[in-house]
Every structure is written in C-alpha cells, then in structure tokens.
Amino acid sequence: MDSINEELKDFFNEDINFQFKKNRKEKNLRLIDVVKGNAGDSEFINKVMFKGCENINSGIDKGAPKKQLNNLKIANAFGTT
Image (cartoon, rainbow, N blue to C red):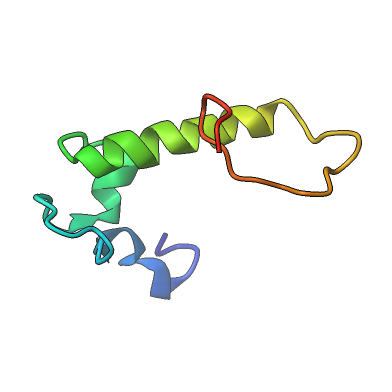
C-alpha cells in the first residue's frame, strides 16, 4: 500500500468499531484481521461479513438483469425480505 500512496500504509491497521451492536462480546477488530480471515472467532464477522458478502458476490457473478425492477427490496440468501 505504501508504494501506491504513503497515506495508505496504515489503512489495514484501522480499528473497526461496531457501535451499533449492543451488549456485544467482541472487541474492536482490525481491518487486517478481517481481510486475512483471522477474525473467524467473531460471530458478527462470520455471520454478516463473510456469509453476507459471499451472497452479494455470488449475485454479482451472475450478471446484471436485462431490465431493472421498479421496486427494489433487500432480501436475505433465502429470498425473504
């Protein structure tokens, strides 16, 4: 990262703070741990980041629809909203 831009050298050392999670057991995570997969003991990362991002990526791989829907909705992997 340093060779791209010197200001990015500490990019992956940023702390991720989940302020929206009440009563969470997890401490703050470092972005580098998420990227390397070392955050596997974090329930939030396992359920949302890894599985959720994989579902989104899977949809991207299938390509864009020929016609855009009028009313877009957020759905989970099972298609329920």
